[in-house]
Length: 250
Image 1 (cartoon, rainbow, N blue to C red):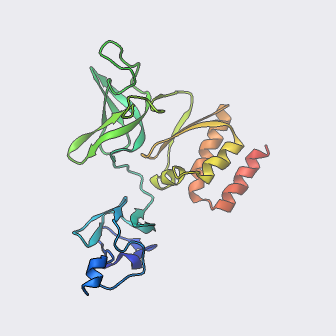
Image 2 (cartoon, one colour; image 1 turned 45 degrees about the vertical axis):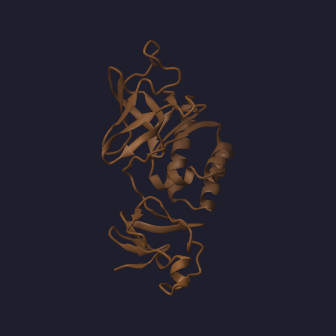
């Protein structure tokens, strides 16, 4: 049964639920709806993960989780999802599994592997090919990601520059966390990353597909950093600061 989206914010929603959007100002003026005290009224609604449009006046839930809202009119479903679904523009960490001619196949943790051309690297030409081997870690961005086509990665931006993308060093540690924690770590000025950098100097690469690569000065410090990041998913802010303080005093 359909319910107003405002009433379901912060509650558990299930696949198939229909959420009614607030009426537009035109509908209110004509008497077709009721004025709602919400900033989403009359603004363009953005559907995040777990939601899709259902006609012009409703949203359809596609996965289980908590319904979240952010001004001015952004809705999404927060869940502890493990399986990644490719999205155009996402930056991900992949593992090269096959090297065949001009094409690399990359495992990105989804239902199928991604396609990566050897020309999708900075300065790559037919004579100057990138040095990429099976087993290498790749940090790249999706330029094609839909249900009808094979996902495609590139390691350059629109200006042909790597902008941090490419082959990742092999000395660090790769591990996997939930997609919910990834979104938290990628928020601007994330407290977790700032507090962690005060414990140990480190290098870190975060992929939207739930993979994290870290490297500290020693193997022991690298393992500690990985364990701290995994624990952050289940710690409050106060608990996290207390745990980080123990290692910063060592």
